[in-house]
Image 1 (cartoon, rainbow, N blue to C red):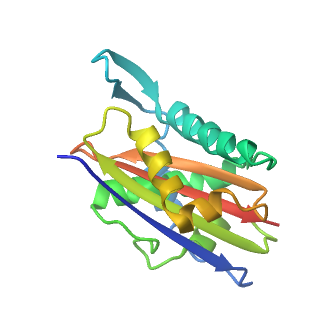
Image 2: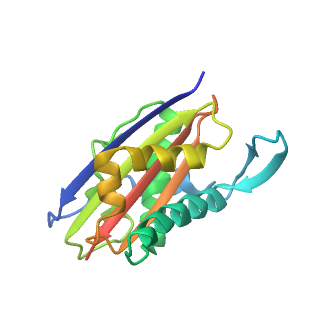
Length: 181
């Protein structure tokens, strides 16, 4: 069975204290260097790290920006940590939402990782299962969705990152965070 779902979320800057689950956050992302098996259509198994997959989709999305003359988004590692945590929580606890386990929105999650002084933040999320290339499937799904495509192709965003996690049933969860300072 193949399925795909995605959502978009944008939050204006709200100044205030960020109270988040820092210890839980770091424990959940401590395994972010784990490798997963990635099966291509050729049925050849290749070991690929989560970070390799994240960089691959990030490059694909920047290619889409380049096709219309936009500057590439700059990778922000702090955003990547927040995105990985959110994807990992969705995969581990079997939910799909812009709202975190503790009720936090993307704005609070990035602040927990030290991202301060921003003007706007946006978030795309997606999940899929059963595809030979889940990264391309997520990218294509976002590009076919007006709201997601608008986020990806907006000249407003200058920094971004993608976090990926895989649930035990093989479902891939994707979170992309966008930042305007």
